[in-house]
Length: 141
Image (cartoon, rainbow, N blue to C red):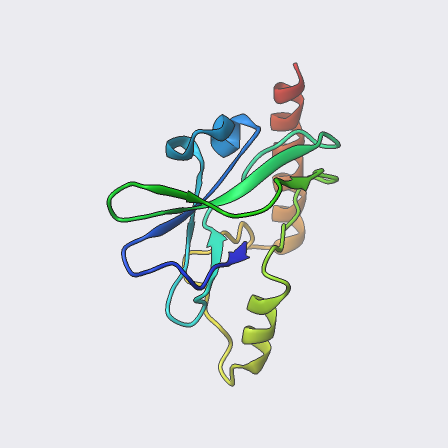
């Protein structure tokens, strides 16, 4: 997730980078992020992105204007090295967590990926991790 205040109504934010699941640097194939009134300017993924563990992946955030023009974020590429079955990359400096703590009623991230919602978390957690490990093994092959 990231924070990007300059995005205007109707525009979107995409994570694009050097892996298949981040579009292999093709903005049209990157991972689209979402936001809503209480979360803005934070953008977050609705679905998890699968990557090989312990393998460096370069990426950037891209603002896609209404006319389709891509505006890449300034600066060098960001780097992530996935170290586990599931992890969250916070590029918003904790802004979304702080906003959640400041709200009297919890910030409702409607649609944000939560694989354990409404189920026995421990059992779902194990099943989810096994599925991700199997998927990761297929990526390595």
